[in-house]
Picture 1 (cartoon, rainbow, N blue to C red):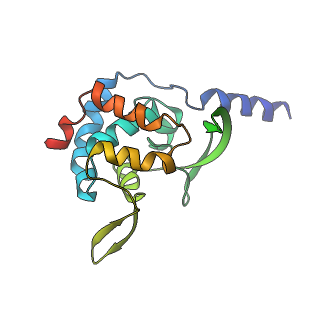
Picture 2: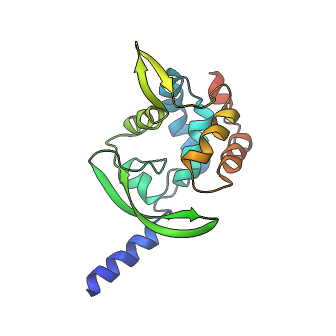
Length: 173
């Protein structure tokens, strides 16, 4: 019983914690080219991808990002998965909950996983979006935020990262 309590406490300490050190610009320099290569192929915006990944993973330093290449807090859809204690907002109150998250073998696999979650199906090789507006990075973030995040300020936080770090420059390259 004592070992279980210690294991739970350690897991809670790691939930959302920074476990690696990297500057935000290092994260952008590492993830930007991957985002630019993959994300537009899905009709999505590298800037939105980079900002979400930065926010969700603490600039790539979270336990989940380091151990599972999961930069978005994507819940488990199919094995392999990892169990992680994570902060969630319920009726505006921050809680810590144990959830199963998707494990990805590579960063590239994680990027594809991120993009694929916004599609319902493919019709004749053309992706069909879940009812969302991807016409600009801003409309995309605002349209996914209510169904994607439990934090009521999620869209505001992601859009601030896009602006502060000039991430729209990755959309045009």
